[in-house]
Image 1: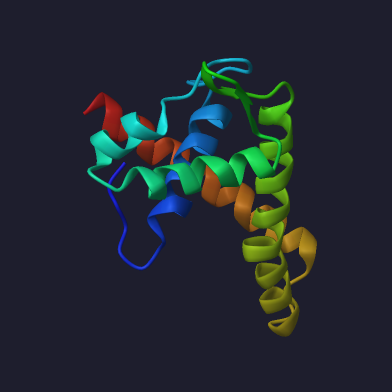
Image 2: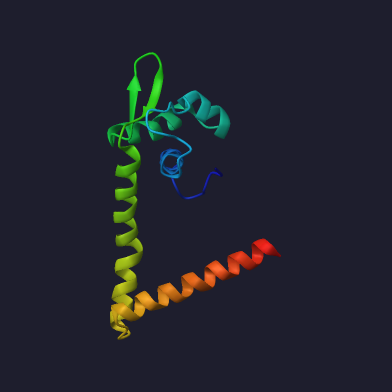
Length: 131
């Protein structure tokens, strides 16, 4: 993970842990790196790393085993996928459909456009991989 300008570092730490859970590199009940490990790896203050981890504790994504460390909660992946799906709908889908409506593009047409572009993107990716 590279630190992004303009976004709080603790938010980026929380998002990276979320991504690792969603992508499966951190399984449920797996121990997450300590705040000191995050701090050393990203060269940040341990309190900043702790703030990112605590955001996920407050959301029930992580939990603490006293004296051992932080762990991924059961059901965390499912909750995160639901949260990210809702965010996707709000940030991308609703504005897309709103703009399509302004332009007189029917939802079925939007779906067809997405389908066509998905096929094109897949073909372009396959060509790039085989080249």
